[in-house]
Amino acid sequence: MWVIFAILSAIFASLVAIFAKIGLQGIDSTLATGIRAVVMAGFFLTAITILNKWKDLPSIEGKPLLYIIFAGIAGALSWLFYFMALKSGPTTAVAALDRSSIIFVLIFSALILGEAFTWKTILGAVFVLLGTFFFLI
Image 1 (cartoon, rainbow, N blue to C red):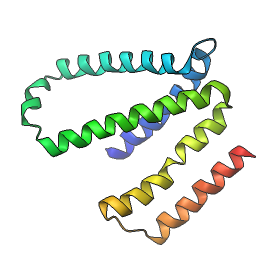
Image 2: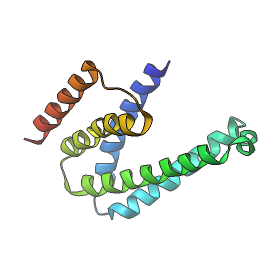
Image 3: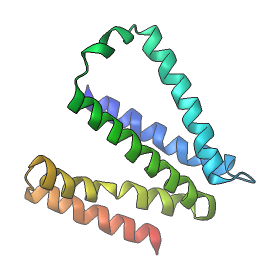
């Protein structure tokens, strides 16, 4: 099931780039990112309510909550810089550079999570870097 969710994520992420590029015309990128964040917050608050997930909130312990907060901050910074880049850069180049984040995920997952590199992950990273390079030239 995770593969289906990942494919859906990729499809919707591609639409973010297209809709944002169109929406950024004549709007400050930071303001646009803030508007997007408010829309997302409203969406998730509604989903949490409809799915009755508020009951689980008291069971979240300190360390997981702290790391979810860190993830929120990292996500906010990612989207702030993404919208700044998208405002003035070509959509495909910005998206390619953004998706090259998998290289950083590989590095951080090894350093922080202790996950091992395999020849497949290294080869995949090389292909991602090559693909990113070709989008930029």
